[in-house]
View 1 (cartoon, rainbow, N blue to C red):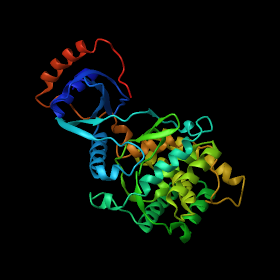
View 2 (cartoon, rainbow, N blue to C red):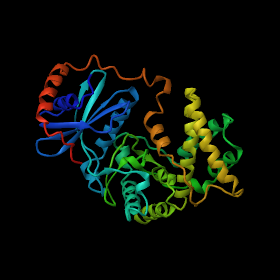
View 3 (tube, rainbow, N blue to C red):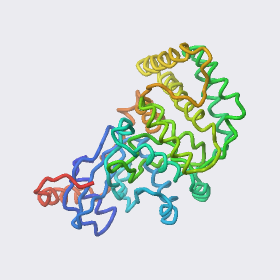
Amino acid sequence: MSSNPFTLAALATTAVPGLDVVGATEDGSDEHRSVVAARLADGSTVQVILPRSVTALRSEQAHERALAALTLATRSRLPFEVPTVLGTTDAGKSSLSVLTRLGGTVMRLTDVSPAKPGLAESVGRAIAALHELPTSVASDAGLPHESAQALRARLLDTFDRAAATGSVPTPLLERWEAALGDDQLWQFKPALVHGDLQAPAFRIEDAEVVGIDGWHALAVGDPARDLAFLLGSSEFGSVDAAFDAHAAARGIGDRQVRQRAMLHAELDIARWLLHGADRGDAAIVEDAKGMLAGLVARVDSDPGAAIAPQRLETMDLTGVQAYLGDTAEAPRSQRSTDVVEHHDVAPERDTADAAAEQLQDRDSDGAAPQR
């Protein structure tokens, strides 16, 4: 099926009958998903998503299940917006979805800095608000629920597999083994977590979080997981402010949350290494080795260093974490062959293409949708 924004926007009217689309533009598509912002006659904008790989389709389906679990009553307790699924329709072997489009702009990790005073605190409070929601949100919807000890066991498995590659420097193995063996570190109360929180999931206006997207990994788990991405920043003061705001908003005594966040961040490099090894991708393996070498250099500079409540020096893990969260199930060698075929798209295809031509004529001003 064509990825032309007008074709997808026209097909969106099949997913949501009565949708009056007057314009469309590309909205962050990549090799796995076609994403379109469709402008409506009433001035609002919706997002149209067409997964183009098996992995992307599974992720989008999980995203929609999570959004269904976030009921209106639950959302009313959050200080930010969450997308709403307006409708779906079959699109050959894939499925096209129409969702409300979050306002604001996509946050970058570099935005969490003194250049945007107050943003770090807003990020911390937003994450805390999610963690304060009842865990029944996940359990009632049949979403994953992981205890502290189950999480610890899973991370131990990652550690064992990474150690078996022979590519992890000994100082890091000792560092991670000590943290995983520290019983105090794992005495925490699981909370409702986003599960794959990265800077681009946030939508911001000025210095406030106004929306969060990407809910495909919603579950009950370790709240430190949602804070780990912050440790890739070199703006130590802003990172401190975000963690402090999170702790103040929650008002609970999880003094080890930062240590576990650091362990999660570091083990993401081990996961990246394993991803490359499993796929036989030498480029990924070498990239991971380089990151491990950078980390061990900092550990070697302080022989007594351990996973402790300290700042982690610059380590941009955003790309690694986002890739692992979105595409780890699909081997790199399959990226071109794993694409969903759309030649047998739903019967509405011809109608959608014809409507797209009319829609393109209507969108004469060519303006981009307003966020």
